[in-house]
Image (cartoon, rainbow, N blue to C red; front, side, top):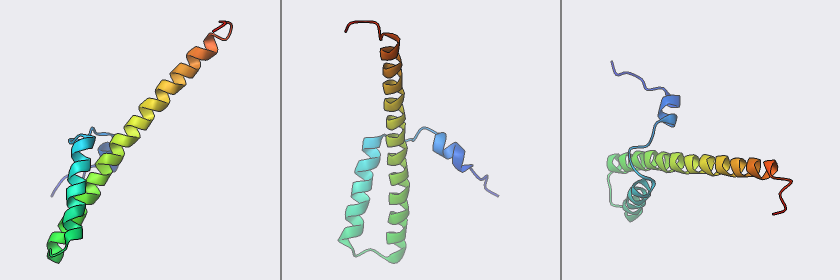
Amino acid sequence: MAKRVDDQDTANAEPELSYEESREELNNVVRQLESGGLSLKDSLALWERGEELARVCEQWLEGARAKLAAAMDERQGEASENDDAPF
Protein backbone atom coordinates (compact mmCIF):
# COMPACT_ATOMS: atom_id res chain seq x y z
CA MET A 1 0.00 0.00 0.00
CA ALA A 2 1.35 3.45 -0.92
CA LYS A 3 2.12 5.89 1.83
CA ARG A 4 -0.26 8.85 1.83
CA VAL A 5 1.49 12.21 1.86
CA ASP A 6 -0.21 14.75 4.08
CA ASP A 7 -1.50 17.78 2.14
CA GLN A 8 0.06 20.13 4.71
CA ASP A 9 3.50 18.58 4.17
CA THR A 10 3.08 18.99 0.43
CA ALA A 11 2.00 22.61 0.79
CA ASN A 12 5.07 23.44 2.88
CA ALA A 13 7.55 21.59 0.67
CA GLU A 14 9.75 23.49 -1.75
CA PRO A 15 8.51 22.88 -5.31
CA GLU A 16 10.87 20.83 -7.47
CA LEU A 17 10.38 23.07 -10.50
CA SER A 18 11.09 26.79 -10.56
CA TYR A 19 8.21 29.17 -11.09
CA GLU A 20 9.41 29.90 -14.62
CA GLU A 21 9.76 26.21 -15.51
CA SER A 22 6.32 25.45 -14.12
CA ARG A 23 4.70 28.37 -15.94
CA GLU A 24 6.33 27.43 -19.25
CA GLU A 25 5.27 23.80 -18.96
CA LEU A 26 1.76 24.90 -17.99
CA ASN A 27 1.63 27.08 -21.10
CA ASN A 28 2.64 24.08 -23.20
CA VAL A 29 -0.05 21.93 -21.58
CA VAL A 30 -2.69 24.57 -22.33
CA ARG A 31 -1.53 24.84 -25.96
CA GLN A 32 -1.76 21.07 -26.38
CA LEU A 33 -5.22 20.93 -24.85
CA GLU A 34 -6.45 23.84 -26.98
CA SER A 35 -5.11 22.31 -30.17
CA GLY A 36 -7.43 19.33 -29.69
CA GLY A 37 -7.09 15.99 -31.41
CA LEU A 38 -6.13 14.18 -28.22
CA SER A 39 -7.82 11.13 -26.82
CA LEU A 40 -9.90 11.56 -23.70
CA LYS A 41 -7.29 9.66 -21.71
CA ASP A 42 -4.47 11.92 -22.97
CA SER A 43 -6.57 15.05 -22.40
CA LEU A 44 -7.31 14.04 -18.82
CA ALA A 45 -3.65 13.28 -18.15
CA LEU A 46 -2.65 16.67 -19.51
CA TRP A 47 -5.37 18.42 -17.52
CA GLU A 48 -4.17 16.73 -14.33
CA ARG A 49 -0.59 17.78 -15.10
CA GLY A 50 -1.82 21.32 -15.69
CA GLU A 51 -3.57 21.35 -12.31
CA GLU A 52 -0.36 20.17 -10.64
CA LEU A 53 1.69 22.85 -12.41
CA ALA A 54 -0.83 25.53 -11.45
CA ARG A 55 -0.46 24.47 -7.79
CA VAL A 56 3.33 24.73 -8.07
CA CYS A 57 3.04 28.23 -9.55
CA GLU A 58 0.64 29.23 -6.78
CA GLN A 59 3.09 27.90 -4.15
CA TRP A 60 5.85 30.06 -5.58
CA LEU A 61 3.59 33.12 -5.72
CA GLU A 62 2.34 32.62 -2.16
CA GLY A 63 5.94 32.29 -0.97
CA ALA A 64 6.89 35.50 -2.74
CA ARG A 65 3.88 37.32 -1.24
CA ALA A 66 4.84 36.12 2.24
CA LYS A 67 8.43 37.30 1.81
CA LEU A 68 7.28 40.70 0.57
CA ALA A 69 4.83 41.07 3.45
CA ALA A 70 7.54 40.16 5.97
CA ALA A 71 9.97 42.65 4.42
CA MET A 72 7.33 45.38 4.44
CA ASP A 73 6.44 44.61 8.08
CA GLU A 74 10.12 44.75 9.00
CA ARG A 75 10.56 48.03 7.18
CA GLN A 76 7.45 49.45 8.85
CA GLY A 77 8.81 48.37 12.25
CA GLU A 78 12.13 50.08 11.57
CA ALA A 79 10.33 53.26 10.52
CA SER A 80 8.33 53.23 13.78
CA GLU A 81 11.52 52.93 15.83
CA ASN A 82 12.96 55.99 14.09
CA ASP A 83 9.95 58.29 14.56
CA ASP A 84 12.18 60.93 16.22
CA ALA A 85 14.52 61.07 13.23
CA PRO A 86 13.93 64.13 10.99
CA PHE A 87 14.20 62.12 7.77
